[in-house]
Structures are given as structure tokens and as C-alpha cells.
Image 1 (cartoon, rainbow, N blue to C red):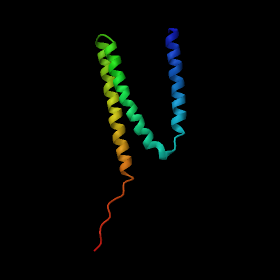
Image 2: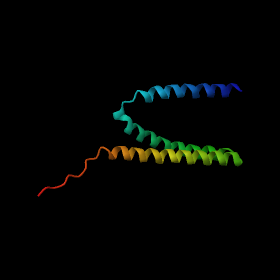
Image 3: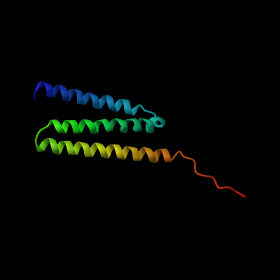
Image 4: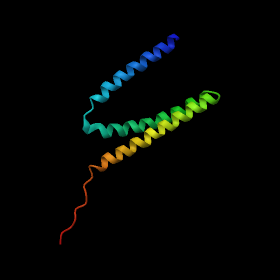
Length: 99
């Protein structure tokens, strides 16, 4: 392994620990707004996946780029569906009029 790969692995592992600590401290009342923001950020991840896919020549870049875009899109769509369902739980049901 090169020195650059070791540093990248080290940063990745530290990011996992920091992300877990930050997310575990979020109160449940803020979970839905946090997820909406995270889903918007994943849209940027999709653009980044397309840029990286175009930078890698050959079929490997095409396959990895396609998978990154598909998985990123599924994450964005699924996150917004879950957020919409959670927000629907807080809507008031219409009341029936009594005559």
C-alpha cells in the first residue's frame, strides 16, 4: 500500500467514527429535517459520481460511475419518500362536520 492510500484509509476510518458520534447525538425531533438536508447533499454526490465516471477511461469507469449514480439516486429518492411519510404523520386529519 502506498502512503497516500494509507492516509486515505485513515481519514475514512476517522470519518466513520466522527459521523457515528454526530448522528447518534441528534434528538429524534430533529431527525426529519436532518434527513431532508442530507438528501439534498446526496444530489451533489450524484453530480460528483458523474464527474468521476467521466474521468476514469474505459469500461471500469463506466461501470463504477453507473453504479454510483444509481445508488446515489436510490438514496435520494428513498430518503425523500421516507421524509414525506414521516411528515405525513404530523398532518391533522380532517374533522367531520356535525349538523
